[in-house]
Image (cartoon, rainbow, N blue to C red; front, side, top):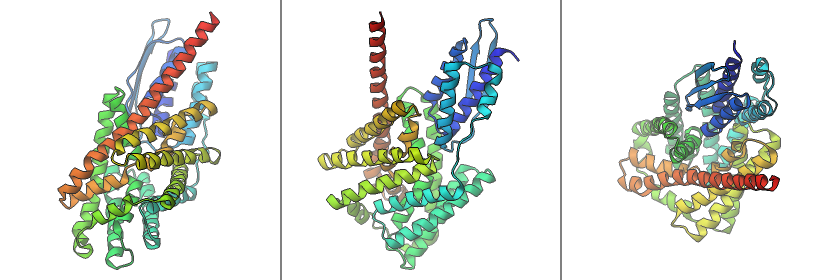
Length: 421
């Protein structure tokens, strides 16, 4: 093998693993570009998608090499992404012998949580989210029951490689059926809470945000591909809810969603403190799900707390402009993660993904889905625009923060060059 072949093979495998663990495409492109240039390659091309790696380059001897590979579905293992990020910096700064690159990648080990810790993370996160939606003791109990079922169904689907679309339909159908049956029996007083909360297990919230971000950042191909995947996955979740209602609709009767919406909109000082605490718990729970280890978990949870405080403060000041305070809250989440990434020299997504959990619009998703299922155009017209605006707002907050950080770094770099002269 030529020297260039070793380099491109390493970049291909590193990029594939980074994307699979949750890295965004811009970061992966940047890593590959820097690594290939560090080894003296030129005419570097990175045409990567969330589903496929495609890179090419030339060396000083005019040897050309090209690599392509498929990327497995994302699993958001942020601890492994952290280790891969460390490997990237090590290779870029030290440029070890190219024949050792594969061994370096093979030796990267992440301390993955055992399944029961992961399940515990889901249970904690779902309990906090259910309480965010005013769940009582019985609603919390059924939400946790559904969470256990979802967890083991998802693991089974992963082992038999069941299509995500089929998995989403089956899981949401079962969850909705269980919630409606317990509601019909009088055990719970509101099945909306259970359904909304358990939908967070399946809703591709982070993929939605990344999709909007790619479209806004000029990465349109990835944005369109991700958009199609997100739409299909969301449609199957809605279809699962619709199928359950088609069977049990006569038992649960007509919906009174507006009463639920009005109850959620009522806040006071005590409720605000509760929301802040619950956001901390939810972000910590999803941090465990994302395999963030204990020493970083507290920072991830603090990010969710900061986001909720900003969100509540702006919501009280400008209640009619959810789009605006979503942008500001997302900007704060991104800024917090960027600062920590610089200070701790870790990937920003390690802190960003758990921080935005309080911003994922699960409530709006349910309202729109309910409007579609029950043919309520009022719900659709009232909440569908807000759903789209919130997703765009989160992405805009990220983009604005990335732009600010980029120019700050650029100004510092130019100042350093000027002083050196």
